[in-house]
Image 1 (tube, rainbow, N blue to C red):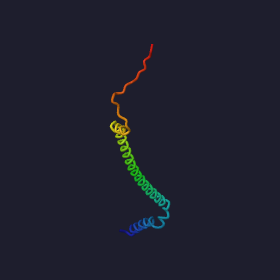
Image 2 (tube, rainbow, N blue to C red):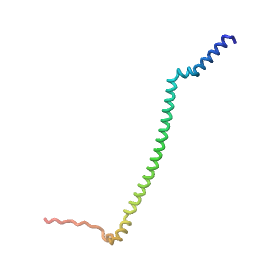
Image 3 (tube, rainbow, N blue to C red):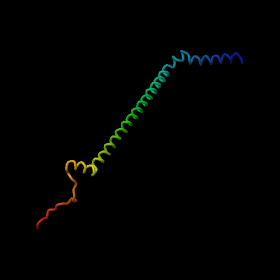
Image 4 (tube, rainbow, N blue to C red):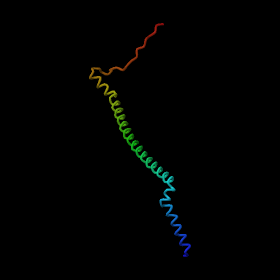
Amino acid sequence: MTEANVRDRINAIKERFDNISYRGVVLNVPYLIFLALLAVMYISNSNKGLSLAREIEKKKKELKEVRWRYKDAQASLIYYTSERQISEQAQTLGIAPLSKPAFEIKAVEKK
């Protein structure tokens, strides 16, 4: 290689080093601030997403528990309003079920 080629390579390496060195950093401060801002926004968004996912899981557990309570209350209501349970509770009060079927009283109109 000739001496001119060697100098050109050295100058190219120096230019690349200058871009990385203090002068290069000072010239690119706005870009570096922009990158730092993007990194902070990315981290913040990630944390917010994780906390939202945790809250959704918590609400799912609460919904599951409330749904279980509802089904339990519905089953006990159906059980206690069954004819057999009502007749047993009525017998403790001294009320007996009808021995004859119900009938309707109609008023007769005179013409």
